[in-house]
Image (tube, rainbow, N blue to C red; front, top):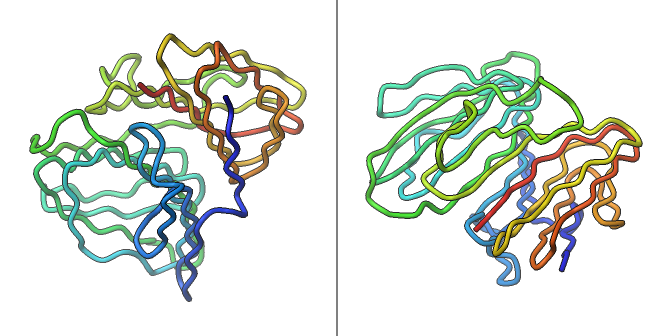
Length: 231
């Protein structure tokens, strides 16, 4: 079964410095029909104007990934990490028993566009952790593992049996993605057009897949998306 979550149906918050779209319930946006999918709790697509950002705030017991697609994101936390995440890079925070951090756009003239993803960990009260990795680039038309439960193939390490893949599929190219027994998939579009088992997806759209033996993905024009392999 494949269920479409269209971009236009997402929650939306807008201020003078932030444009944020929520695939699942988040902060003041609450929809009991969309509280997450399996271990995937949050997908927020954020655009932050130059010189603005989120002040110091706490998290706990959550795996948090931020993937920057354009611009840059400044991060500081109470573990002593302070750095810039550039376009094409991801940051992984294991909040564990508690972490405080801030995120801001260091540019004077360029917005930052990024996805923030929350994964529910296998256990609570763990030690906090931090990583930065590059996710963009590499071979097109294939699944590129960027985060996993065991950190294989140089991916960021999550405290959950989840695989997250970044894909750029060239126009008219197809890709087959198997789903293992008892596994579930979520596909999140970033740019372009894609057919998922014949279902049409555009930028910002998402789709869940359960009880499917596999998925056939075909790009209309070049498509960039994330695929989540979930237990």
